Amino acid sequence: MKRLIVLLFVLVAGVASAAQRPVIPAPEFRGIARWINSEPLSIGGLRGKVVLVDFWTFECGNCLATLPYIKRWYADYADKGLVVVGVHSPEYSHEKDSRLLRQRMKRLGIEYPVAQDNELATFESWAVKVWPTSYLIDRDGNIVLRHVGEGHYDEMEAQIRTLLGL
Image (tube, rainbow, N blue to C red; front, side, top):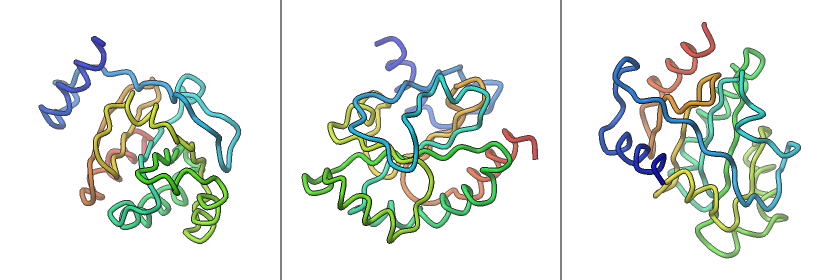
């Protein structure tokens, strides 16, 4: 509960400079129905990597608008240490269908790991309120940047490059 209160404070306060930002450990993935394009992942198991976690759903137009950027970052930086994890948290009941999700991912060209969060357990534990929401996590497993909605792609990429030491 204390971590959730701190996380909410950070969300309300906005993105502060690194010197001012409190250290917020990224929560674990919870209640994942299945993993697509990957064996099960955990935040603890990803320590030492820079991780972009993108909460999305395939019926969300704003999510689809951010997808070209996320796919490009995955293509450009995966071999440099970036791990991209999509968390598909469905808004509508038909989006819980694994077969349909796999079809959409194939059509959209999503090759990075995707966690199917059908019961929204991870969505809720990360205090996500809207799609899309992305979190950038440093090598120590701490949230460095949170972005809601579209835009600010240059800021996200600059932070990715900084964390990767590029």
